[in-house]
Image (cartoon, rainbow, N blue to C red; front, side, top):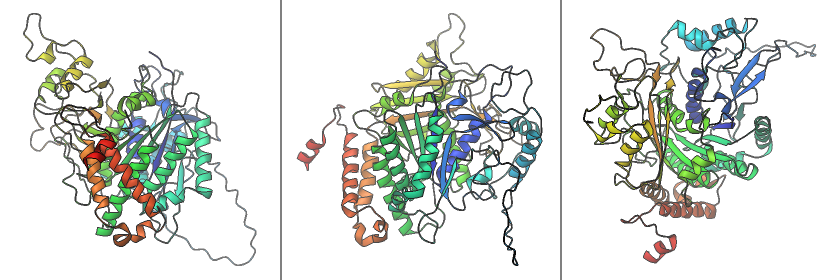
Length: 582
């Protein structure tokens, strides 16, 4: 057991990735402990947060984060933030002629941001404010979390969230945000080549400067977690960024998550084609330069005609709202990434990647039970026995499970069983109702359950007691079957009574590398190969890649799909054997 802090730098590239990232950082912020009397949290927040100091001497605690997005994505959020401002206007007006003022009305803040401004002002006005978690002093620090918990106000922001900064509840470091300006008048990154060609000149210099700032202050940097839009031009930018990280920080983990919303505004058949091509090229290139690459989406598929979005039995979310779909993915990502953020018994990024990305299979798929269906007051064997016929999780990568028990590697995480029993408490001499009830540890119980579906697959497990804590403005997208802690209720609320506000949630996730990825990658390859791109979408290649490079990427995708192909005996075949079959 060790509490050595292995730092992680996070990069968020693109608008939807910043939606997911904002929810994820809000979840991390909600879990910070400021009570000096409480024991240390299971999750070591210093892995992803950094301590600093304002010009006024106040201690700050901000994400070790670089977020890149287009102009217009910030609205009411200042690019340089507000923590480190001097409060003095140092500009000097030297013009002595007449001046004509053109005043533009600032964007209107929603009710949550207005309340947040008021709370920030009250807290920062206190003389001894120090937001460092687990501070050693004897004074219990008052925080935004404490204020919001007392207010117990429910925000309904579905109609007011336009951009991710509309629900951001934490302060960011001045070096965090980078606003990129693509060529042209549309202010959009629609094609892979646009993003690929963007990382040069001042954009590259700024990114390198920000990376050096965050990396050089780390004592034990374990790597980078990259959230990147997969369906637009940011896929090209992410490919270049991961290549740079791979070349510049050899030996560090690079865990890349390709994010895609269920739907895009103002979608057209041509844009849908662009989305498919961006997903195709982004998957190939980011997988090449990452320790592993995991697509994350609630879409039913990455092609132009996807099936219905993933449905969860105890969620009532609107798939068309980025504010909703990104919150579901953030909950899953909170569990997926917890292994390398633990205070004790943490698993380094490289070890997690080596467990899954074996023999060149660097694409993995994610599945999640959001929430994990556990009845309040029962045990883990009871909950898993209720799911004896089918695994409780749903696809989070638009890739259905194969269902035949074959898997090359799996990493399962159960997070948030706090207050519930991991093992059965049967009286002595009582016959166990199921084999799971006779086991004596949570790890053995979960492993036995998963192996009943994947008998011979290598399996790594992580059990974390602390749940994902939900605080305003996390959307209340939960069914009436859940209680305030996110566990199943035996009975729903009586008619006329409002359902409880869910303040925490148990989540179960699984990362898998297996034969299910063969048809998934092959379908992506077939979709991108079914037409002559020079005739159907010539503008897609206007800023790259070259036709030869595009064809090479398609061939790499075909070979990547072949890496996941398995015969009935579980024996892999080489790509040369495939050529013999053609």
